[in-house]
Image 1 (cartoon, rainbow, N blue to C red):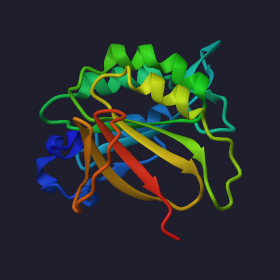
Image 2 (tube, rainbow, N blue to C red):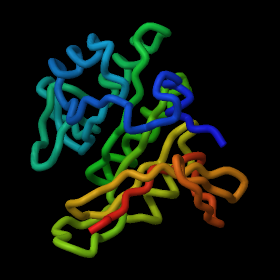
Image 3 (cartoon, one colour):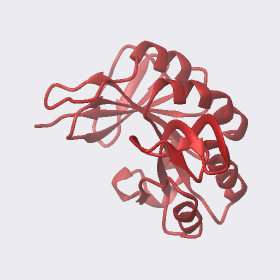
Length: 200
């Protein structure tokens, strides 16, 4: 069974721990520097509902709560990365959604810009964590319902908790496999899932 992400980065030879990341790429300056950095494989950014410096209209922006203003909208973010998608600059994206409203407003933008040319992970905390959980999770049913409609994405789900371990599950024909180890499950949610687990 193949992985959308590791197939895109054959140099890691199936070892997802070798994938290099830029985190919280939530402003234009950081995005420009990240796109110019050939060593970065995956770009992680936060999406919430807010305004840009040039408009008061509520739209999906690149920001982490409590911030509600950014110089970078999701549409601009995806547009710039799409323009950079070529055999030389090879970078994938992880979008971390902080509200259901932001995700609902983002679905059409994602569908327009993402045609499967690079890995795209859709992340959200959709369940309450068991320890020190202080944040309200997104509605799991609605999030999964919307995520299933997005083509060629990796679904990354988690708990509202403080300790995480990434486990990669691949789903196909009702089966899934834990990369680097073996495992099975009976329910298919989407083409690929990254599943977050507490280990302590």
